[in-house]
Length: 267
Image 1 (cartoon, rainbow, N blue to C red):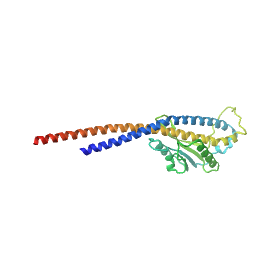
Image 2: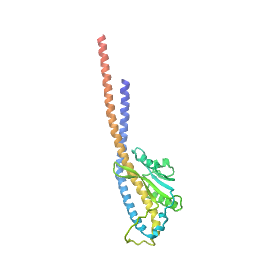
Image 3: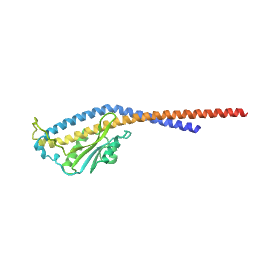
Image 4: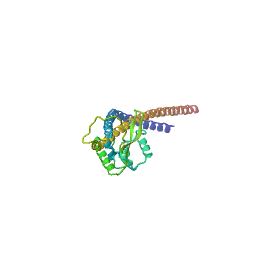
C-alpha cells in the first residue's frame, strides 16, 4: 500500500509541474494576442487597398496583355505558412492536412514546422518581416515570368474567431480579371499595363506579409486555447489523483490500526 501512495504522490507532482508549464505558456500566448491581432488587421487593410488598386487597373483592356493574367499550364508552386512551435492544438496539423489534399510541384516554406518538411525556406513566421515578403515576392514574380511555374498558390490559416481558425488555399497568380461596368475615374501614367506589371510584385508581397501575420495570430490564439484546455485537464487529473491518494492513504491507515488491534488482542 505504501508503494501505491508513493506512486500517486509522484504522479500528482508530475501533473502539477505540467499544470505550471501550461499556465506559463498560456500567459505568454495571451501577452502576444493583442499585438498579433493588431498586425493582422493592419495587414488586411493594406491588402484590401492593394486589391482595389489592382481591380481598377484590370478594367483596362491594355492590361489583358500582361503576362500576369495569362493562363498557362497546371504546374503549381505553393507558399506554405505553418507555425514556429508546436503545442498549438490542431493549427499545424490543419495546414499539413490541406497540403496533403492539394496537388503541387514545389513549395516555399515559412515557419519552422513548414521548414522541417521543406528545408530552405523562412524558419521563423513570427520574425518574417515586410522586407522578407518583398524579397520573396519579387523572386517568385521573376520565376513566374520565366515560366518556372504556372500558378502560385498559398496555404495559410484564416482567423475566424478566438476559438476558430481555418487552413485555407488561395491562388495569387495568375491574376483574375473580373468584368466591371462603368467608366473608371483614375488616370495611370505612363499606362495601365506598365503600372500593373510594376504593382503586381507589391501586391504579392502584401498578400504574403498579411497571410503570415494572420497565420501567426491564429497560432497564438490556438496555443492559448490549447493551453487553457490542457490546464483544465491537468486540474481534473490532479483532483482525481488526490482523491485516489487520500483513499489509498486512508486504507493504509485503517490496515495499520487493524493490525495493531489484532496484535493487542493476541497478547
